[in-house]
Length: 593
Image 1: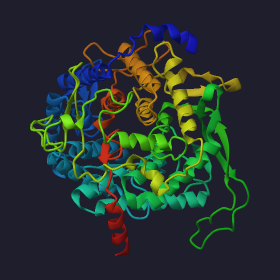
Image 2: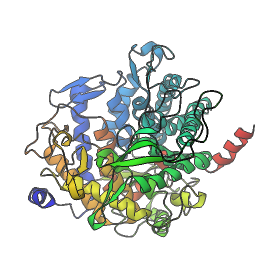
Image 3: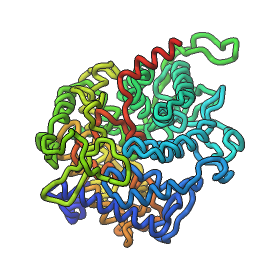
Image 4: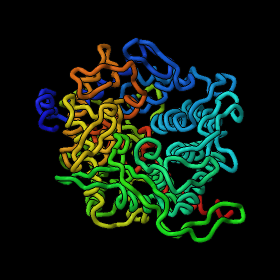
């Protein structure tokens, strides 16, 4: 398949010699995507790129604007950021301004709440914090006593009119912590911590009951799960595992709990779901959980709940890998691992403190000594109409791109050697050998998903046929402009310094531009990545600009644009500030009280 696609891939434009030029190319597609939305769908949740109309498919909250604020900020698209801000300013998130319809708790949290909190953290504009608090108050009503969070909530009726029947899946209940903990800290309202803390306890109890850190995709709404069903790091399972790692990064008080749960899950993922292939490639399979090995330790408790089993579940691999699973080589592994890559990560954290960085990590050398005094406080911030916090304009003399270093201030608690490798100091995951190789092996398979098709664009799902030969079934050939491979290319490329990951990111970007771009600059999902040309869908998910283009841009931007020692990305690519280590002592004191 790779050979068949080589001719088409060779027709795509090569990666520019200048990384600034590559970043500018992505930036211009961000500009054109936003311009198409603003022209045809201003204020609506989404754009239909072929029919040139807006739709409110997320509860009339201006989702496209919220979801893309931080991308526009990081790309320094000043006029576009102001336009998005004006949309958010006009929307009323209080009950008086809402319709009675219900919205997804999960989606509204990661896209809406995460987007507003990120925009506030990056810009310092308190408008976004006020809107986040309004939205958070509505979403917080999804946390009800005695069960997992309700999967949907009415922004108008708050505690009424919500759908809570049936089961839930791990992703929708386990992907709320970063946003609510960040909201609690930003607003100084600890009641926003209570919901995700309860979910974490319930998930820990479920893991204990199953005697497995891999949980099935169907959970009982009241807590717990049967030891049968499908296990996946694709749809409905992916971000649960992602947030175990990222919660441990975000908040020091969560490292003993969420960190330990991720450590155990990581070991079982490696034992149960990986399929080694040729040339260092690794396939990340799904599995069927088929009852228990061994007999339960006793019957039922007095309350009727089964006691913890003595045996581990049996797993049977399902040779199917969603594009969604391509998140795994990124932050949870690369930022937390303590294997052979540890010294490299530590050296990178040191290099972030002194520009220019060694090639190939620094595309835009600009020594701190050349910046105006006082340090990191330029007289003209990148976006002069919005209050700026430590944003440094960096100009590349060879290109027109202007980017800004975010969050670097003289008093920043995150700027010290080794912070980017903080999990090594806190024992989030073991320092065993081989983790980096596994992560890169999975990423190679994700890259292959792009390179194996005539269009250079990945299908939604990859399967393994006889002899573990890669194959794509006809119903799995569509593409939804997903970000997960671009995400992992960014993190693994940054933390290893291997230029091949940037080249893969450019090939991906060039293929999308050739195959998915509409005439007015918007982008469309595709029906069949093997067809030439593919039939287009009248759909452009908000995550195209919020995530995919953001990560592609970051692949070519300076690594200091958003230092990983101070920020963690939520599952919608919204960067949130890591809590300082002092939060650990404060959290312990609060727990003792």
